[in-house]
Image (cartoon, rainbow, N blue to C red; front, top):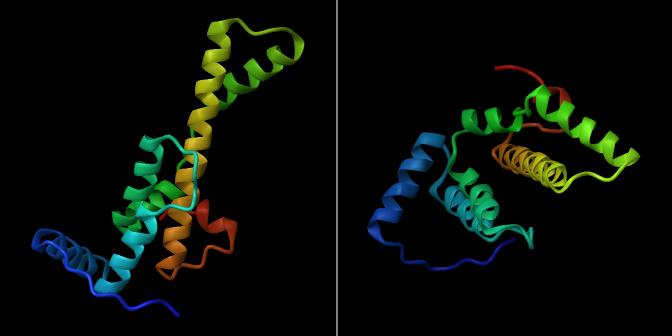
Length: 139
């Protein structure tokens, strides 16, 4: 059970939320609750840009969320990561190689967080996310 509140929204924000509710075929209350929940993410310590990006996912359509939930990085990304990790296991990486590995790792972590948040939002919209096969299916 939640807490009832009275909230005065600017007309432009109210109309935007109302349009989103109509577009998503959801109640205005559900759209606003999702927006507040996403704006107050439980994850701490994220770079502000990533936190903002995750918060913005709540405003996407189901189709857009499914696309994000199924995103992958190109094979070259994994090959380069594997190569650098193997080299790191044998010898020290150069500063440039370490910088590249750090960026590849950050890209991967960002993708995983985006995919996870998209899946959470899809589940909150009534989709069954318990079977990992749904993330591999192409609509």
